[in-house]
Length: 245
Image 1: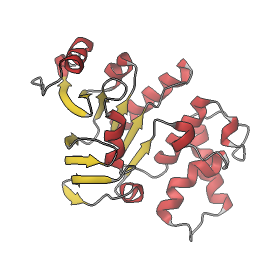
Image 2 (image 1 turned 180 degrees about the horizontal axis):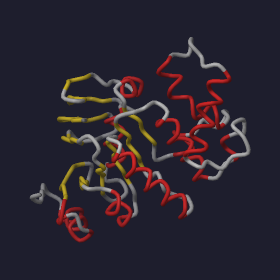
Image 3 (image 1 turned 90 degrees about the vertical axis):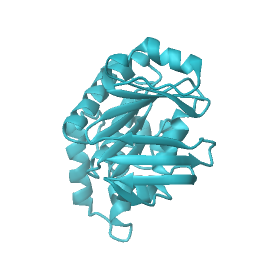
């Protein structure tokens, strides 16, 4: 579904190759500072792309900014929820419809009735706890803020969703809900890249892991080789390692 070759960015990501199939859940594993977040930011063009090619559904495309990525059916939940995810000055409703409004164009705004209907649909389906659609998003818990950002992307009917630390700092119940949502999206054919500092969570959610160290890919694990010991061995050992499927 998505393929990158020799992709690099101004954030210091070394050229790397990456692919994800339709309906696959894969992830980037590595220690803090390994370059996993910078790599997915390059894929969404959240940082300036300095080299490489991208193909979506086999067709070479130019993604030079987030709007280009969105038009190709790609969504991104960033690591910094407060700084890069929520729009603090907006309501829950406006945060949910934001991405779809960008794709539609700000000179063609949704009616209040349409926006309310979209927000109500996802508040119910994701069980977002909020007094109303008008509530400021900053009044919600961290877990419910994450659900709002997820709703924002699900509303766009995307093909590929990148989740960077989607369960950090939220309660256990909401973590489980998000993990189940990821697996359901994959069943429905959406490709998902999942990043978490919790190794067990990655192993429960992903069928393939790309291992990073010093902003370079040092391993790729799948199948019976996808174990915590192999992940740590790749992180500690460095060098190019790839286990057979």
